[in-house]
Image 1: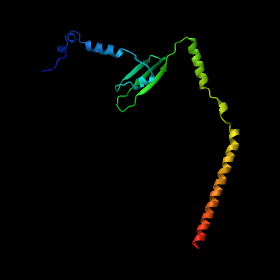
Image 2: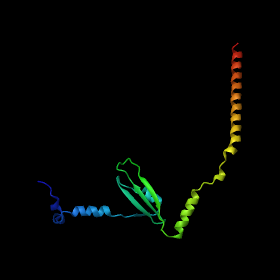
Image 3: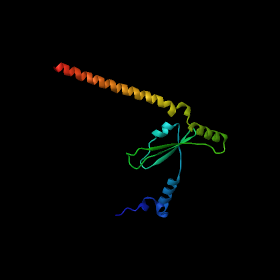
Image 4: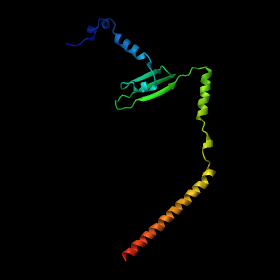
Length: 148
C-alpha cells in the first residue's frame, strides 16, 4: 500500500499548494536575533548551510554569521555599524573615520636619516667578521702548535 500525504492532513488534500506556500512564507521571513554584545553573536550556534542576522541591543551594530555546508567549514562573521542618514553625527563620524585613516608620517624616519645608520651597521658587521677571521686563524695556529 502506498503512502498518500493527503490522508495525513485533510487541509492539504483540499489545497495541494499548502506545503509550498508555507515553505515560501517561511523562507521569505527576515528576522533579527537580539543579542547583548558581539561575543554572544559570535558564540551563537549556526547550522551548516545557514546564516543568521543579529541585532545588538546595547550598541548600534548588526552582525551576520554564516556557516558553509560542511561541518568542517569555519563560520564567517561580519559586523555592520548602523548610521542614520541625514544626521549631523553621520557626517562627523565619516570625517573622523577618514582622519583616522591618515598616517602620521612624522614618526617615521626618512631615507637620508637612515643612511648614516646603515653605514655604521655595515662597518660594525665588517669589524665583527674581521674579528672572527682573526680568532679562527689564532685557533688554527694553536692547534698546529699543540700537534708538534
